Image (cartoon, one colour):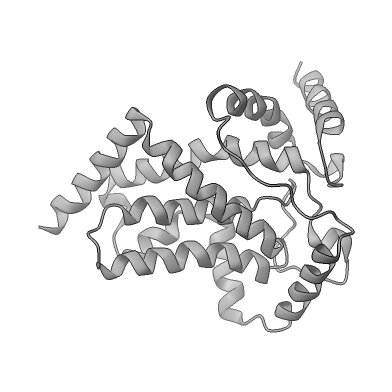
Length: 242
């Protein structure tokens, strides 16, 4: 049965991608399994989310973005590579580091961040599948990456989407002028741009991810259960600072 489901999911990927040339066999099995769920979920619950199509693989913009990626790849520092690796494995943990708090001491905040990750996953996957954009290193093999190529399409950037979404929502917990808002914004934006430095995303992937994050924030904050989770995490954070 599992094998049958895998073949069915692979068929869906091959037959329903609306644009792009990301190879059908490049999708990881867990993403293949989740694509039908992503389509059903977004069409039923989040149809207001909109992402413009990416540039075509052979467009002047895509080719110029690859030139840019090759240029910045030559300027990678060891610090960049270390940070890229940390964010590739556990991007959400970097927000506890940025806020200088112990993750284990803030269970409500930890749960909120995991909830943001879960609730944004299917919308991101929906658009990745819809556009099926080829990764830059798949077009130009001379572009050297510093992490393994992710087993799903390029557009929009999931790390850019979720990183910026974390920063937008967590910033709402602080009063205007709090320096932590700038720290969160810098980290949220940096997670996306460091995926460009890593060679796995185009700048236009990042831009689309930021745009989707702004929509997802508004969408999530309208959901009563999510709003309750946000308020609980905010209360926990503020009570520990008093």
